[in-house]
Length: 114
Length: 111
Image (cartoon, rainbow over all chains, first blue to last red; front, side, top):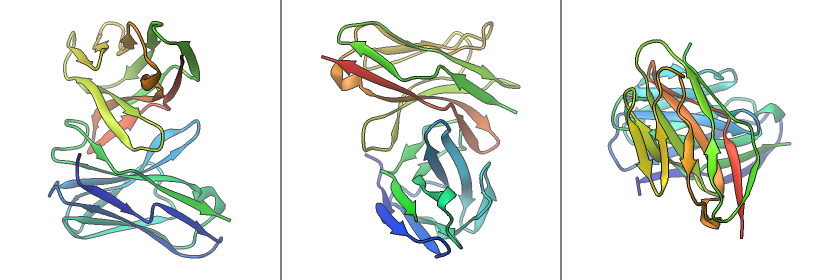
């Protein structure tokens, strides 16, 4: 199994509070991704990173920011959580450019915003 | 832009039944196509892939053939087991640095 750890695995928070989700990998893969999974929508890309300090927006990036200061860590931050951000968040990594090789996924972080 | 459309679920089958999940795509160029599977409580994992037209991907008894003429990549398994109960995602890439996923199809296999 690919070495990907997401934390926290479960979190309940209130509207307006900041939340940070962490993805940690031990594979030294260059590319890292944050997806959210919602019923009827499948997986939607929030942000991705193609190297340390190199990040870009995905299709649903509003309300989210990311940072990657080390190869192994990719942080997703909700500056002011809203109920629409209640979701399951998945981190993924890949050795090659996304879509040309296999993506390895973490086990997910379930976030509930009350 | 590039995208995939897969059949909506949920799909409920009896053990040993034949499973087909339809997936069609829209793309420029020559994308690679993938099927990912998500077992309950887990993240997604790659099931199979095909990188060019007429390629057949196969794994764990599942197969899918990359059909350029019909822009399709349907997933099939001849005899499903209870352990095949999962959510199946069709995906296409590359789309810039990204993989584009379908909405997912939930499959439940009854004993």
